[in-house]
Image (cartoon, rainbow, N blue to C red; front, side):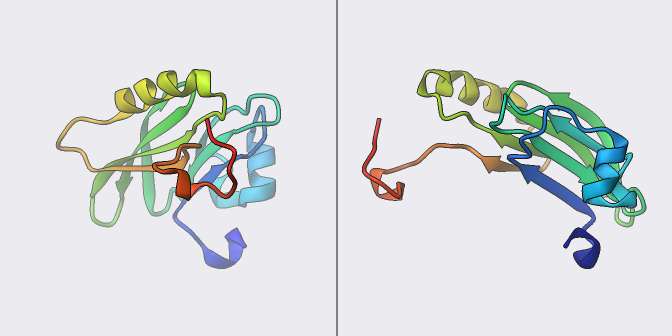
Length: 136
């Protein structure tokens, strides 16, 4: 699917991978992304985040890897437009929610920098957002 759609940036959540090297990246992302990626390790079989970019179109800059958030400064080569992309995985353990939110706020770039924040937050705004009645 990646080879067919030819994306310039890839963000994956729930990789469930503890480590990703160039060989593994080439295997599931393709050769254009095999050396242009950053990842946040999975916690046992939960989580795992990856951001990859096609070096022909995108330049990856500074990386900030925390416990729940992975951020990469991105510059589009054709327009020189720059932004920060943050991919997150919020654990379902309610005791860690405050730590996750503090880290997410700390991942926000400077005010003038556009920010794309995406991922699996494992948070809901209202009870009706849940697909079951198990609420805490």
